Image (cartoon, rainbow, N blue to C red; front, side, top):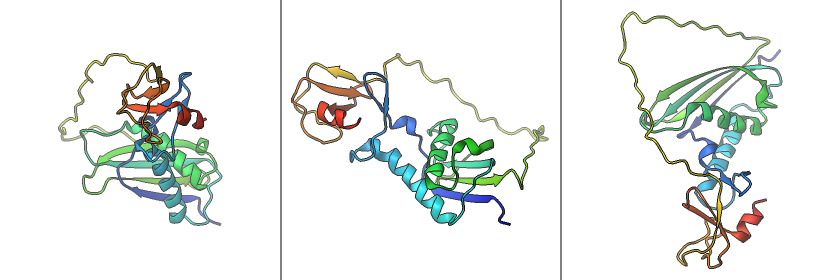
Length: 206
């Protein structure tokens, strides 16, 4: 009988999809995959997870409830995505690989955050609950360690994340998807004006 277990190691700095979404005027999320631009990065990362998860675990399909142990190694302790958001992003790629049927199978999860400047990555182990169980304890340190303190983020003005339809555009502005100069008075802006999408490309996204 095969033991329900799999391990996946994906090299590179982990990213989260929340940083790569665009939104239409109704607030519906768009996640581009073939624009040739910055916003494609998450879709490419998800495909990388799916491919490598399958290559590292050929012929394995985990169908039962699972325990997950996820270790995320960031390049820096100064700036990195929220580990909570990373978890969901990683399991989207794992589900796409066919290694699991659905991320709802993950009933227990332990997530640990580390830093490795030379080799950022994540390491995921999946254990079938028919063969494995999990226990943990929290113990008081005999020697007090230096605390890892966090600063309260600076207050930011509340701005809408939904794109707006602008009345006019600078002729030097280009569509983030097709790279054509935006000459019409009808285009979409997102990411606080950093991303512009012509009406034609915006409609094709749906």
